[in-house]
Length: 231
Image (cartoon, rainbow, N blue to C red; front, side, top):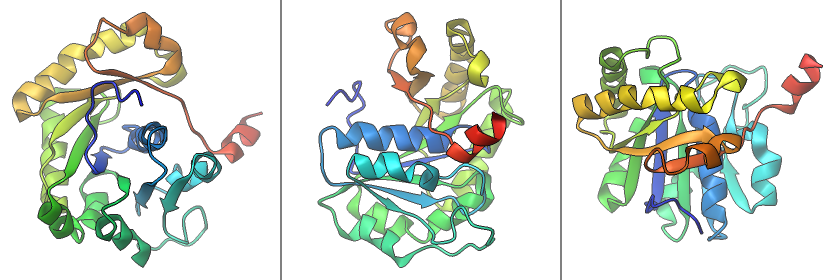
């Protein structure tokens, strides 16, 4: 499996500001892990954002043998913080590798707190802070660090690394990504955390490969209902 030098832990948590792109990264990461393991789980702890959920990509996950754990109310009109008891299987069954998608900001991170003791006891996890300099409130390193600390406080768990996912959607170019490197490096310097990944859409990977360390290509997973509405 090409893990791009990431050396995945058994549990990888992705958290960040609203719109940072953590859900899409979590899905891509789980799919990457599934290329070398038939025992991959992805748990959706996003009880805040009803618009883009891991459940939107249930078909792609299922086709790749990935076990999806999410609220039964995901993608419905029911607004509830309910989380399935099945999430505990992520921590109990250590024969599986797991990806956890945490809700945006500190309010969403509260859902992770109840599972932190299990993660700390095992000690085989990574908690990655997804940043995007083109999103509201994270345009500069100082404010990004403030949000990082708010998430850590709510989750009762510290980040172990950074994912630079700076993009402007379909308008993103190779130069857009290159221009974000200094921002990510400043966040890294202020936080003391390494930049574990710089993620880019797959069409830009060849152009940027070798110019940025630990670059990882992503495919975009979106709700099919959105595509139909936009046509």
